Amino acid sequence: DTAVSQTPKYLVTQMGNDKSIKCEQNLGHDTMYWYKQDSKKFLKIMFSYNNKELIINETVPNRFSPKSPDKAHLNLHINSLELGDSAVYFCASSQETGLYNEQFFGPGTRLTVL
Amino acid sequence: AQSVTQLGSHVSVSEGALVLLRCNYSSSVPPYLFWYVQYPNQGLQLLLKYTSAATLVKGINGFEAEFKKSETSFHLTKPSAHMRDAAEYFCAVSDPGNDMRFGAGTRLTVKP
Image: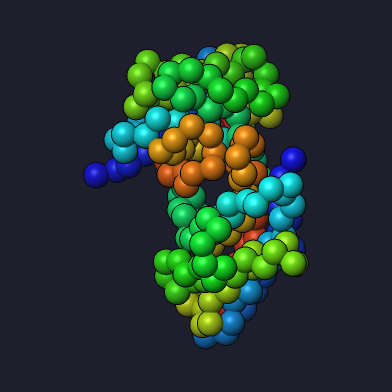
């Protein structure tokens, strides 16, 4: 069974479009995250949700909006996509609040904006 | 705020040779330290973690790392490299009250 899953795996779209990436974890974890990995492999945290509440919002444009319908899901919606949004987006989860605990990562979603 | 620095964005070794990937950290309190591996087109997978127990930590796939407080280091080693070890490796640090910070990553290439 997949612990952290993301859909889609690949996403190619035009500038200005709105798209969503879905994430689900079946580990029973309380905290979920979204990371962005750029072309140089640099990994940057975007959001964190603990029990459906946002607890981290790094300096991410407000075109990005996380939505958590329940603690097993954390979706990422992106409005008005820009070329610079092209990256691999990873979802992750951990057992407890905060990032002091081991995180389990999904396989990633490669977003290409044309 | 805590941070990690990985020395060398690219390390190349021959199959069977020693693997040494360097990581130095800064933290105002005793940290938790992690090494993650990312195989091509995959997500990050935990190799090992240091949580203030034994300073020498053994992980999966024959990797280990030693926490050295005096050197603020947490270098990753493996005695004998395999072709399947070729991947991107990330060192990460976290401490209470702060989020986890990842290093810039080190790409390991293994030559036959």
